[in-house]
Amino acid sequence: MATALASLLLVQGIGAGLIGANAGVNPVGTGAKATAGTVTATATEAKMADRYTTVKRSDGLNLVFPVISDIHIGAGDKAATKFANVLKQINRIAPQYDAMVSAGDLTDKGEAMQYETFMAIYNGHKQAAARHLLAIGNHDYYGTSSAARAQKLFMDKTGMPGIYYDTWINGYHFIVIGSENKTTNGTLSDRQLGWLNTKLADHASVDKPIFVIFHQHISNTVYGSDEWGHTQKHKQLYAILARYPQAITFSGHSHYMLDDPRSVHQRDFTSFGTSAIRYPELESGMVQGNHPSDDIAQGYIVQVKDKQVIVKRRDFHRDDWTGEDWIVDYPARKPAFRYTDGRDKAKPKFGPTAKASIVPGSIHGTRATITFNQATDNLLVHAYDIDVSRESNGKHALTVHAFSEFYKHPMPASLSFDLKGLTPDTAYVAKVIAIDSFGNRSDKPLAVSFRTAALSPLRASDVTHLLSLSMYNIVGEASRLLNMRGGK
Image (cartoon, rainbow, N blue to C red):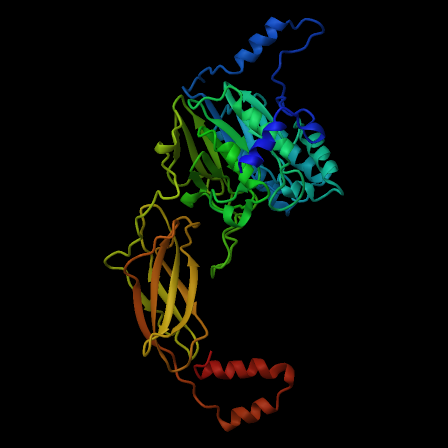
């Protein structure tokens, strides 16, 4: 790690080159206005000093900015409609915001027409006085034959000065970095990482946050970073940021939902996952699948005070806030971090009246349906394991992994799931274990005993009927007869 970081320091003074032709230049122009020959060195120095100065807003805050990501214009008609609705809502709940941040995947395939649609909607609803910080995502590379062409198209269509650049807004440093090709997990060159290392040091103070925006999460940080995190040079990226406990990163890509408390993470700096506008996603392996309702759209409204950054979670699809606000305190001190890996050891619990039962009429030869009351947790019940074993010898039969459906508002008070693949005429015990977002499991599971139905033998008339059917129909008819006799 030390060798890799040292090599980055050798190139830390190098600009971004073609892929960031104007890296370090404010996307809407921060420098002194150039009227030919009238900008003096003294005026330039004064302007540079001004960018480090904070002037309070009329509402007493220092900054307000929304953070959204994964808009995916071109991924169906709903993408454009949702984006427009989100921007309208932001304008209502955060009037006179100072900046708009989007953490990548503006488009679904990086095609010119998709960018034009994105910018038409964006320009139609943006607050003109605000600064506009757009990052490139992997999907924004998909529509061109080379990375260089994709980067040029991104810059030409959005007006961003590069795929990585920085700016100062009312005394606060914003740094945008971007993957350099279409790989799912992202690619960062030593050149870009060296540039980042230099920019982070510019007037850095533990008293003020540095906001760093990029598309792919850094692996082993926020919720979703295990499956969708940046893996190429992520250790170098992490090591650079780790020198700045005041840094706050915003990253998208996974689409994982903000309701889960792991969407904020602190170890050496602070990370936020930004969910998505177009559609949500969750980890695989659960019985409900990994795509909740397509209507869901989430993001943040960030408020900056002298000694705090307040991150408010927004359900745009419900036009309401979700969960408690997340607060980052300043001056930044790692021992004072509250959203750490070990922040939660409390186990979820079932209430005194909670119970599990088998739905009446659901028992067949090879399946049954269990229903149970939800557990509670100090933060969030994330999922359940339903373990089914034979009552006679404890032999494991199956485990159903299921979300608590925390993504629904309100969360359902009870859940029901099918238990399939069982043996007919067999006694079973099903145990329900609640699991929170940090892997804590309930001590006392809910349990219910039941017996599957016995199979009734087929009558001779049934066999004759099956033999008369074509091969095309015989499987379906046999299934129907077994169901009638408790075999399904």
